[in-house]
Length: 327
Image (tube, rainbow, N blue to C red; front, side, top):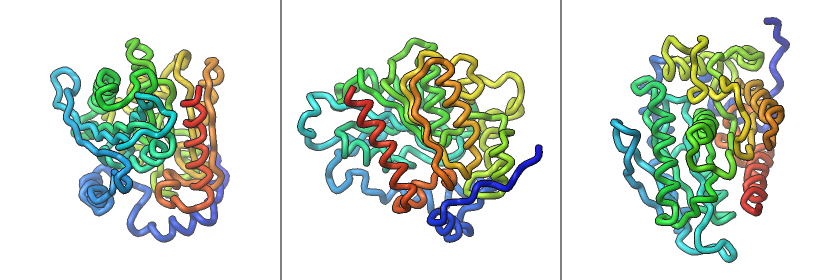
C-alpha cells in the first residue's frame, strides 16, 4: 500500500500531544495492559465529582449479568431536581466506556454524558463490562446487553423513560454501542431512539489506509489496535469468521438501526472505518450524521476539552442529542 503523509494535527491538539507524549504511547502492547490498568490515569477517576456539584444523585448498583456469568455494576446518575418541561420520566443515556476492549471502568468518559444530561435533563447509566484478554468475546458485549435490558426494565424506578433510551460510547465503547444496536435489532429487544458513536472501534481487520497512515502517531495506533482486537478475539482476529456483534464493521445488514451520530478525527486510526460505516448506514436507508474533525487525534476532546476543535465537537454531539430528544 502506497501512502501519502498523514493529515496534520490541529495546532492546539498537536501541542497537547507533545505534552502527553511521555505518559501515553500510541503503540500499546499486550505486555503493557496491566501496567496501564494500574497507572494514574484510571486511579484518578475515583476522585471525579460525578454529582457535578450536587446536580446528580450518584449510585453504584449491582444487577444481574448474563446467564451463568457474574453480576455487573451500573453507575446510575439521576438529577436531584426536575428540569422544567421534562415531564415525569426523563430520557436515559446508556453509556459504554472506552479503553480498547482491555482498559477502563464505568467512570471512563462518563463526564461527556453527564454534561449532556445536565444540559438536557436526562438520567445517565454507565455499564461496567468484563475486559479482554481475561474475558474475550462475547463477555464484553454480553455484559453491555444485560445492562441495557436491566436499564429498560427498571427505567421508571430510576426516573427514566424506557421508551426514550439513547445508547452512547466512545472508542471501544462506541464499537460495543454499535454492536449493541445490532444485537437489540436482531433479538427484537428494547429499541433505542438513537445511538451516539464517538470515534468508535468497529473493524478488527485493522487494515484501512488510515490505520497504516497513522502508525506510531497519536494515542492509539495500528499496534495498539491489533493488541485490543487480539485480546478480544484471539487467533480469529482478522479472519473470515468474526461476528458483527464483536466487530460491527463485519455486519452485512445495517438496515433498521436507530438514528446514528458518528464522529472521528481526520488524523486517527479509526477515520476510514467510521466514514465507511456511516456511508453504509446511508446506503442501507438509515439516518446518520457524520463529523470528521480536521486534525483531530483519537479521543482529542477528552484530552484537550478546552481546544476550539473539542468545543465544536462537544457542541455537535449535544445539539444532535437535543434534536433527537425533541422529536
